Image (cartoon, rainbow, N blue to C red; front, side):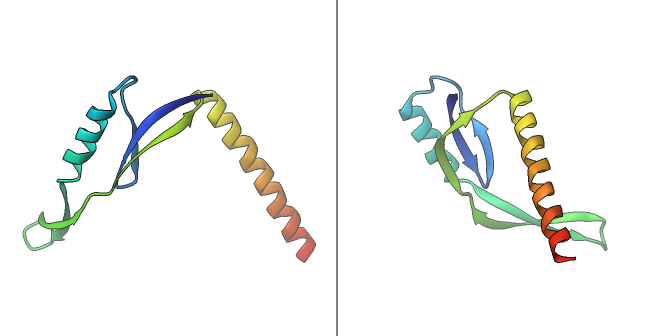
Length: 95
């Protein structure tokens, strides 16, 4: 299975370009840590959003195993079916 280096920004994970140098990954992560997330609330009086400074961002760099999309979907569908079958059997045993 292929492994890719990823960067997670506030829980959203992105694949980094293949072969990206470690120093470039460190520089990117360092730069992203300087960002501040904005929060927002809706102002019903003016029908527009108002923004405020929120928290900093959470950055995580890691290596993730990668499979092709069709295989991942098949695995997800099959495991969901097994999970549902177990839950159905547990519910039937309770009845």
